[in-house]
Image (cartoon, rainbow, N blue to C red; front, side):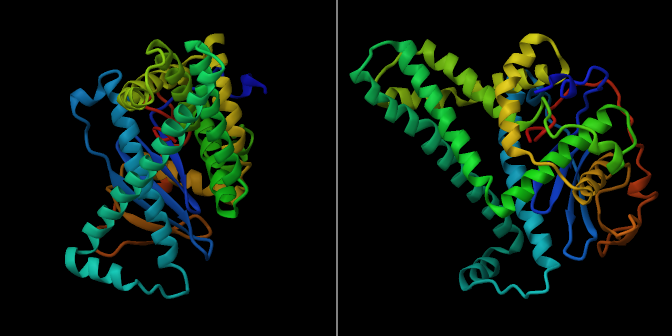
Length: 359
């Protein structure tokens, strides 16, 4: 792995992060987010939204990592669902909601149902993550007590088993058709951010030259989580199974906060320590990113431009020639075009996180 192509010497880190969604990409800028989805007819639907100013306490070290992690879960799930909804809207097949969905909509309203679906999805995702990657590894590793009483070895076995489960899970889903496409958009997101951070004009030809790996990817964040979790769990020794599970759950906010700060450091530094710590996450990105085509790069570029322009939050469609065709009904015509956003402009600023803000 040529780290010089990933930790680019002259790159200028930014606050812009991103996330791959269904047939598209969400870019998270400093003042607004932009969701760009490739429609079945080849056009690109773009939906932007203004970002609320965070409270001061939410910007403190460690706390901001927990806030970023939770908000990324909620926002990420919502963006995935919104991208699926956009594709469904432009699909030729008519969607017929089930009786339960109809009843919920009539009872609570479509907006409330949508919000509830997002939070329910997040709860299920958290339950799956906690069950498979926290409770299961520490429970299974308990069997190793028949062979050793070493706290170091027991925690090391648990940590390795946890990473093994996660890597196998990611590897297994990478063979699914829709996931392969999602990972290609993930690669397009990284290439576009690389191009922007290197001050290049945002066109597919410029983005294409960069790697699909990025030091501030959310995948790297997860690997930092595993590394820091091992260190903190080791300090707690090897208590009973119940105490281990409770202590690991209690430490989750601390681990998330520390991992976020480490990710920020990795994003703005290229010293040897950062490179070594980043290697596991970068190798995992070889699974979670695929080489995109120019069409997918165009979507990433459209999302990048939309999250940087000064127009109000709105919805619109870009035609196959890149020109703006329509805007959502009831939204006033904004001054300027999204495509008029400055390209390759990169100012030295504090990093929030590239992917996903946490990708």
